[in-house]
Image (cartoon, rainbow, N blue to C red; front, side, top):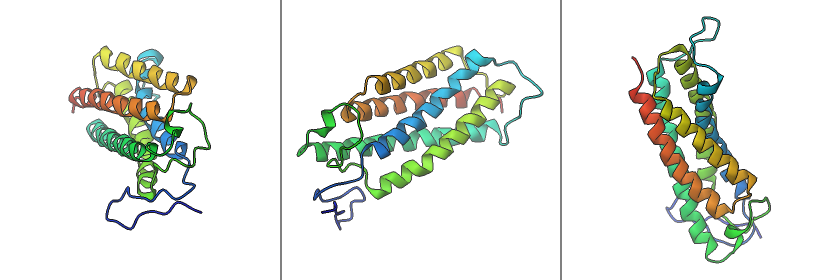
Length: 195
């Protein structure tokens, strides 16, 4: 029997009646979106000297950073919704504490509306983070080095979650915490924009 969504007005409502979408189909893309933001740290190690041969951003740096800040806020809400849904689903199943793996179809934590939000934010984050990196390289954003080290630290935390095969509960909790930290770093980048 396929898991049926509830007919209530709650967009995340569902009735736990069988197999559901694998939770990792939502969690991994959301984690990947956080990784895109963390990748901005690379400009500190790869080099930040202006180079006329490098392609300039297509948009104004202020617009790219503002859009990336919006993406961060969307990701915070994605992880909050995942946490709420996991709490509701985990009352009846222990899959939330098992190591990261595919096949936990009894945990219905990713309704269609949440999958759609994640599907929209991932390409947006990728493009916006890329434009912000170009703006940093061109000198249009001059942020303190601490921001880039902070982004690098967040990247290492994400890597550890994957290498250690953290549980879904830990992955979602850490994802929420990291999305909040990344929002703060992006807001610092926003304040560091020259325009």
